[in-house]
Length: 109
Image (tube, rainbow, N blue to C red):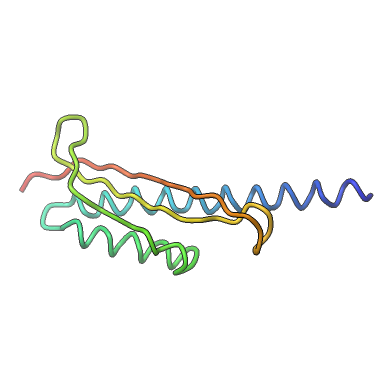
């Protein structure tokens, strides 16, 4: 029983870190797609990325969000980068830096 508790808590912590990583990756991709829509801008994509992260996780994860114009496969596009520190051993424990990127090809007007 003493061995089972740390194992279960470790699995739960891993699931939490993966959830945060996947949510940040999805928000980065959606922010890049939002910026790539005709009539939109990088600033609007960044605001959308921050809104999605704050709504799904916490404002704490919106500190380092950057959306900028960047070529995607030779075509004009946008890149959204989200950098966040995520605790790996409990809430007050050591943290790892996650850097997630989303890309989208810009629509032509």
